[in-house]
Image (cartoon, rainbow, N blue to C red; front, side, top):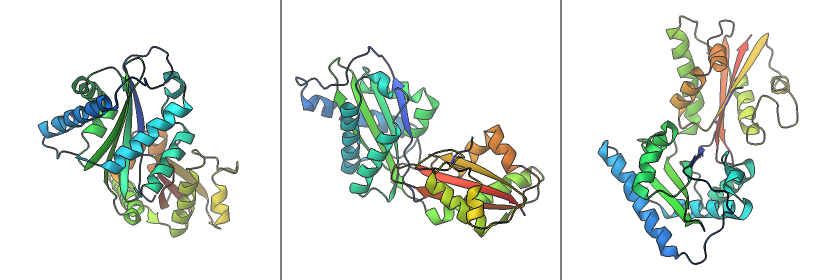
Length: 298
């Protein structure tokens, strides 16, 4: 399957489990709120210390991100009864909830990504543990981030439920499809293939598909139709067509890297029969950056 992203506000939600007796996600009413605040401050210090050690700029605290993280955790506690209930990450309903929070807090001018953590470790050890995992390390040490916010809740078994949000200014979304198009042709040139021509019609179809990914991710459209039906709706004539989708990457380079590391996506990008390409990107209320590529033989 093929993945993708438009209007820019990304959220990639990652889970890390350190110790897990099955227990309800309820707050201990006897735990003072300032304990969690103190833990949060230590966590911010630990993150910025690791960034400073490799020459990255420190991240500035952001109250809006703190608020978004706190509301997200409150929603988890209200809707999930145990760690096992969210062991696969944020579900679609939670993503929609977070998207609504972003809308209300007017965070649409940013790329926002998050890391969700449940564990007993102290801040310094917790960050070191996250840095040992490639996906988490990429978030904590991503050079483009400028701000962070987080929320910490101490549960009844003394574990901490933590949601960390990182943000950076949005790139020009208008340029993203063309940048992806350029990267595709660079890859094709390196492999001795003819470059593709830009197709406005295919780009229009790709944008429709990027919009639809918020409702249903995959090559079947939300109304249950195969993805190719979008080409008929826009009255595109073609002999052969293929679609690549991706979701949740930060920039065009990351999208291309993801596709090229997937054999099925790479095969489409390097197919010799295609002669035209259109790209469409969108970021919906769920906060996920979606992109679609549509390749045509005309």
